[in-house]
Image 1 (cartoon, rainbow, N blue to C red):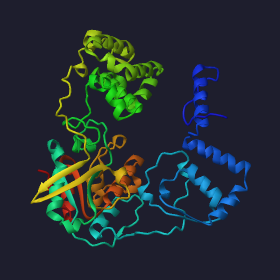
Image 2 (image 1 turned 90 degrees about the vertical axis):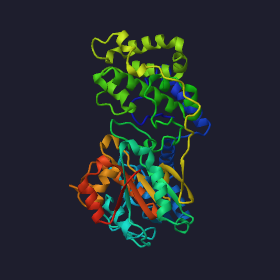
Image 3 (image 1 turned 120 degrees about the vertical axis):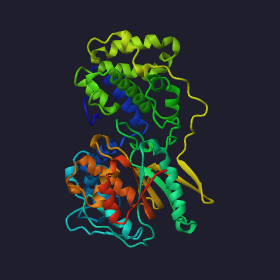
Length: 467
């Protein structure tokens, strides 16, 4: 058996780490535990040593229908083509504008959609008003024809930064005012954002937790993950019980990034989030030391954060991070950084985790769910609220960017946008095409200038402030 890695290099064959890795892989193989890449390798080997399998399989499946083809990787497509293409009737279905895989290997080899493909541009889910908005953010440029009934104009909710947590409740009241119980019927009412959490030194509206602080993991009422070192490193039991070791490592890296930012280390000036920290470190020095520190804090951070151990931990941090700190910063100044300020323990009144919002208005009660766009892909709603999010690498807010195209005032075509922004528009397209009756978008008022509001109003959009 030959073991390979998708990126980087394996340890040298004579090292203990390589032997441990091989032992682990053999143990998993014996237990029947494989990765997707493993199964592709076995499939490739089977087709090479048993070519007659192709005849057996395509005779067993003379007609093949493949859905969600836009999210098929080249590894998958190459096997499908080798087995069925030109041998069986293979019909592929998919919406290229809902493609969520964009940076995978060999993406240039993908053949969907092929030349001469048929196009279904109509939707019975919604009417012309929603169809016009949805078609405006479709990267492929294909028209969208709404054959459903039009009842309500789309709505843009504008909020002040300080009112971001009022958006969901305002939307709930709006739905109660505009849709009857019969209008909603068996459909659900939902609110969604492209990102669950994230970072970015920009005004609120960056991700779902900005709007709904209690979403998912029971964060405190501030709606933000702690910026304090002690909370990120010192809650190992909670992290491992509620998430995973990967989440634990992510918290530790985030804590280290906050320390370096607080110290104004030049190294992290352009590091947007904790995932980029190891890369930034390795560009200056070998990353072994920072990885050792990360592992140490992930496994022992809870004990080291005890009050009697904190000075020892601070000295450890200072010693390991000193190569990356600004010249001249001494330990006494380091330990006084704001990131190390002591905080009170969480109170018992911490908001409970919930993905539901309940609104009572005009004698009616409405409960609706909140989640990510990816989690609601394929759903049909009576009403949908799309909460703007910050794209990080794209440096754009998706709704604000999309509104330029919806209003017809964008300075360039969608197909000319950078790939990161095209990916945001595909997510926006998915989100906006969920509702049958009422489409709402939410954006920070500071990101929607008056000329854009006027252009939207001329296209029939209703615009109101969140209160």
